[in-house]
Amino acid sequence: MLEDGHEVIAMDNQVSGQNSNLEDIFYHDRFSFYEHDVTEYIHVAGELDWVCHLASLASPIFYRRNPIKTLKVGALGTHKTLGLAKAKDAKYLFTSTSEVYGDPEVNPQPESYRGNVDPYGPRSCYDESKRYGESLVRSYREQHDLDVRVVRIFNTYGPRMRIDDGRVIPTFVRQALANEDLTVYGDGTQTRSFCYVSDLIDGLLALIDSDLQTPVNLGNPDERTVNELAETIIDLTGSQSGVTHEPLPPQDPQVRRPDITKAKEELQWEPEVPLTDGLERSIEYFAQHV
Image (cartoon, rainbow, N blue to C red; front, side):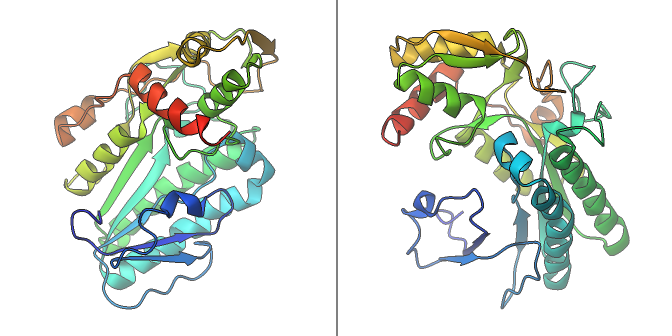
């Protein structure tokens, strides 16, 4: 956005964010950063064209440690950011998640699928925070005629993730670089679909430039088992690691794959970075930060 000439104001409460990710732009003339929690009242001077609400604790490690904060950022944070957009007559982007589909009984998952989510389950603080957020966005659209965008993001990875993030790719890479056994939960046949960060950003920008006001999946439909991912990372790092198996966490989804037909047709978007290319770039980054 800065490269395109926009002024950008960023807010983060530093629960899981890292200021080091902003080193290249921190002192840019058109960039401002405020340490702020979006569950609190937000004041921004002057006009705004867009409010983009990407705040959440997306990693299971972080949202299990902070379940109430996770629920608040999906409820109060969405309310506060929607209120800011309404006050500024700005357009609004809400980043939802593939987790709204829960442990899906349909694969791949289209936007029309209503999901299989346990509202009282061990993952519910994250799943329900996003489901509630989507409903709140729709309500602001209907009651206040707010121009909104909703994206359901599937597993995204790449440089600048925290090495202690807890999600599978940084965990596997950290273990492989240390020649430790990779920890696979369950038998490893569960599947995920991994989208490289630059592809996701292209999708977000395409959505912003569109008139699409209903939820759209953004992710890579290249579905892989966790066992395949482990083998690929061991190979790419040249690691001596083996694999150990631990019990599968309760209600861990067995499959995950986006149906991106809508994104292709409405946004003319689809991911371009192959998994091995994205992993190589990520491994290079993680190797410098272990």
